[in-house]
Length: 122
Ligand SMILES: [Cu+2]
Image (cartoon, rainbow, N blue to C red; front, side):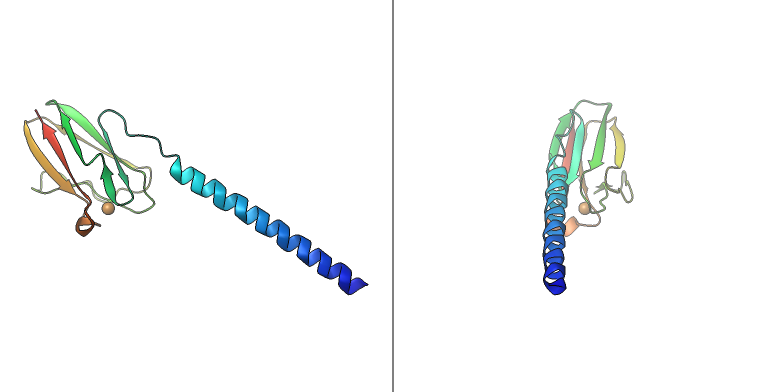
């Protein structure tokens, strides 16, 4: 009888643990999907890509690069004009583009994974 009771307790506790686990997984995956959208002069770093990959702005515009990924990223100018260094999750890097031109940048951690973008300043 006691053995049966213990088995029942184990089964119930296993079931409860599984339910709690499922709820946690659902909550975490919902949080990951709820990242919002980039602002007017903002670029998200997400899933090892830039979003959007290209932005056209007027001279003097400050662009905010925000890391929405779990991985670390960087905003590194292809010509050496600027380099954010490591940007952690939910951290941002700001750069003001004062001169007209096309500015290419990449992530030094994932440069071989199409994590590249362009700012066109008019
Ligand atoms: Cu990256």
